[in-house]
Amino acid sequence: MRADLRVGVVGVGDRAAIARHVEAAGVGARVTAIADPSPDGVARGRVLFGNEVRAYGSHRELAASGTVDAVVVASPDDTHADVAADLLDAGIAVYLEKPLAITLEDADRVLGVAARTGTPLYVGHNYRSSAVVRILHDVVARGEIGDVRAVWVRHFVGHGGDYYFRDWHADRRRVNSLLLQKASHDLDVVHLLAGAATRRVVGMGALSVYGDVPRAASLPTGVMTDWFSEDHWPPTSLDGLAPTVDVEDVSMMMMSLANGVLASYEQCHFTPDYWRSYTVIGTEGRVENFGDTAGGVVRVWNRRRSWSHQGDREYPIGGVVAGHADADEATVVEFVRHVALGEPVALSPVGAREAVGAAALATASLRAGSVPLDVPEADPAVVAALDARARGRIRAE
Image (cartoon, rainbow, N blue to C red; front, side, top):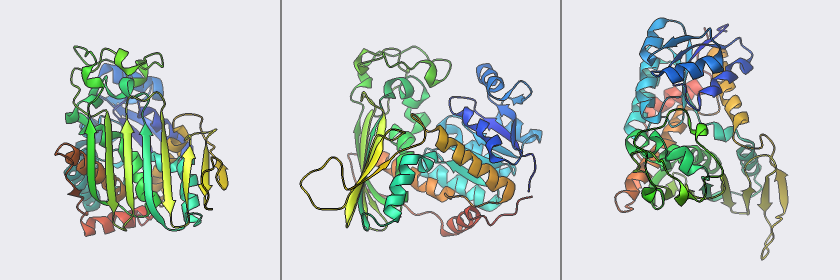
């Protein structure tokens, strides 16, 4: 057992708060250092983790300091690959906020470093730990709808204008696309529910609303929750968007998975409501969620009829009433116990690579006239090494 695990945080933005969950792992883990290039980020870090944490201006300074055993990386998406690769090379275990990278090439590069060094890499696909996804997965695993043949996902991003079009998220150089940035959660869930990864994609999308909304002269300070308000409605009434807005605000993709399952995903950033709808159709029924947090319900239909809102079975959704704080804690705790005790984890980083691959190729498809594109498979040797490590075949020092 690695007692009193010292954890650092790279990038003290909106998602950095998840690092507070390290203490819930019950192995003496604590946040001891932060790295952020901005004074505002350092100040946020001291509020979140205490004035005694050490502060560094970059992840490289943090890595060279010898003050951490593991790091939570919550920096902007375009930095993920370089930061993760550097830390893994330094022998520092990495919890990397999704996505793994913004291109498939960078995702494969990071996996290669993780396989070569043997340093633990965990990608925070927390949504598979949410209450709604656990229920859906259990329904499928119990065979209540037979063998899965199709998965449909609709993602209503009601906070889209405030959350994703006021800062760096609106710049394709920083995220590639919001299809990748947001859908990486859901594509991981699709692969989980269907039991296979995507091998062919077709994408469509457009910048259909926010391209005409007034822009600001510079990026805002603070984090996305600082400038969000439910009073900002309708979307066409917004102003002060990011200087660069060149990502799509409505996107959709169709997928063919390795086992023959067909899937679709739709994302819209100008809806009034904010939630995800999953429908899984099998050979003996279908399952669908209504709401995705506490108070919602998952319904199963497995008898023939014309129409029924109630379905044949019903499972209430528990957990948090909004967001995914419970899923955040579950994933951070799993990572910490993996590093400290060598316990297995539910998701190999290869799964995170498959989500990036599907989304990145779908983005390329939609920007090239919706041509079908194939998602190449990962290096088998890398897959074998990382899958073995995820199953707990590492030595905890």
